[in-house]
Structures are given as C-alpha cells and as structure tokens.
Length: 318
Image (cartoon, rainbow, N blue to C red; front, side, top):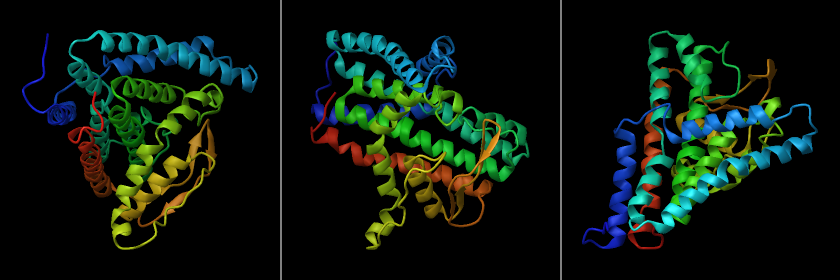
C-alpha cells in the first residue's frame, strides 16, 4: 500500500499538485492520443450518428442533452469507482489533475502560430487557429489571426484550464474530470454555428455555468491595478450576438490591460456577422501576441497562488 511521505498532509498535497502543474507544462505528452483528445473525437462521432438537423429545436436540445449524459456518465462512474477503491487516493488525484489540466497542445499551437506569423506563413497560422475556433479563418489577415489567437487562447485558459483547476480544488478529482469532459463536449459541438446551435445548447450552457468562478477570478486579476487604485472596473458587458458574456468580459479586460483592439466582425457559416469591438488601442501585431503570451503565464501563476493556500490550510483536500 502506498503511503504519504512523513510530512503534513496539507503541505504534501500543495507540493504534489504544484509539481503536477509544472510537469504538465514541461513533460511532453502525446498529442492525438491524449484521453481528452480521444474523448472530443468520440463526441464528434456520436453527434454525427444522433444529431438530426431537420428535427425541431426542442428535439435537438433533448438529443444533445442525452448524448452529453451518455458520453460522460459511464466514464465518470468508472473513475469514481477506481477513486473509491484506491488505496492511494492522493496518487489518483494527482494523475487526474495531470490529465484534466492538459494545456500543452494549446500552448504549442499558440507558439507555432506566433512563429508562423513571424515567418509570413499565414496559411499555416490559419490552419493552427482553425483547430480552436468555429469561425471561418480562411480569409483572415495577419491582424485577424493575432486577434483570433488571443481570443481562443484566453477562452481556453479560463474555461479549459482554470475552471478545471478550480473544480479540482473545490470538489476533488471527479468533479474536475466531469467539468473537463463537459468542456470538451461543448468544444466539439460549437453553438456559434447554426448546425450545433440547439444540439450543443445543453453542454455549452452547463459548461458556461460551471465556468463562472474562473471567469470572475481572471476578471478580477486583470483589473487588480484599477481596483487597488480605487477605480471602478470599466468592463461591464452583457451577452451580445456571437459573443458570450464570459468572452466579452475577458476580452475587454485583456484589451484594456494590453492597450490594443479585440473583437469585431467574423465569418460564421459563410456569412459575415457583427459583434462588439473593443477599441482600447492599436490593432495587435506579433509583439502584442508575445505580450499576451507573457500575460497568460502570469494569469496562470497568479491563479495557482490564489488557489493553492486552500490546500495548505486544509480547507480542501483530495
């Protein structure tokens, strides 16, 4: 039977999970064979079988909810059973955390996009960007690719990485596993496209609902300078066509922090759609994308520094 080292359990958990987050960034992981990559492909395959675009909107929403539950519940039941019977629940928790905060693929593609733009390889940069957005990027200029890259990566950082980490801290590894699975399903069925608008409604609504603590935390971190200066955050935003409340608040905060422009029109289903534009400065360039990458790392570090004391003082434990 595996046992904890002879340290205080709270300190051990903090050290263990800090090492897991660091290892996830530094140790190469299989790209296409990662469990959540496979899970997303399973979600896409299931949708091709059960999604009937000619059904009524209510039927599509019910079918999407049932498909979401069918995908998620069996795997969660198996994971919960393994966690329950495991003699080394701390080791199981660390392994689940390593899987759930997977971000190497996104980080690598963001850096590859940045490098491609530096070398003038816009076609490659568009291909890399298309992996993470449901909009049409075929006609994007270099400025458009910079914007899209900042938008998709900030959305991933908040919804995919931080929200998973928060639910791990609040409710443990099974909750984190459930949320990350829900996130992958929502990304597989992007409701911004008409084809998925109703079938993906339940998954997207649930994912957005559970992600609000992460959105609020990042929003406050980005506005800390203004708050410490006694200023009211000038980032009020309500849901707009083709821009969710979460995205609008975060993108406006990033635009304000980096003094650049985000948002604006986009192509969806072959139609140019209008959405809010945050004019806080000049159009972004490669140097701005590098500043954004540095800001993203700082956000991740600050988020963990805020959450990790929960383990040190014993408020939460795996």
